[in-house]
Image (cartoon, rainbow, N blue to C red; front, side):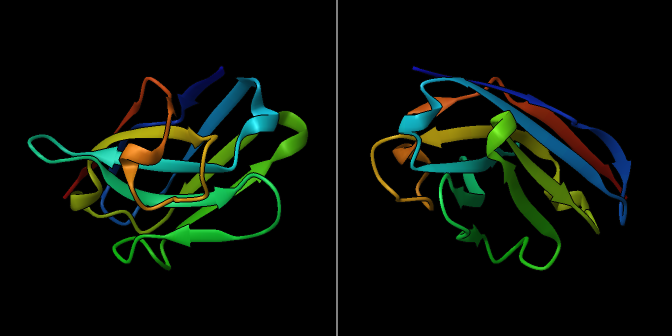
Length: 124
């Protein structure tokens, strides 16, 4: 079991920044990939960014590439999502998720552990 708790969401104006944090606990050693997935009202869950739990590989959706940065601190079992130049279309609930089975990062259904989500609202 892996437990995930997100923090750092909020309301920000377009062009602003937010930093999301995800605290992981439990059997984190079994984690292959950590990801951030978002869901806007009336839409399906959408991959945002992911990072391998070991190594340096990172992955981004085209819609956030160059604006968002994912990082991790393994010593503290934390994953971060730095979001810069935010746009109104980034408004969503952001979930931290862990995939302990595969290294597939782009498909939300592959993640088997999820946090409760944190709301990000970007005003125009």
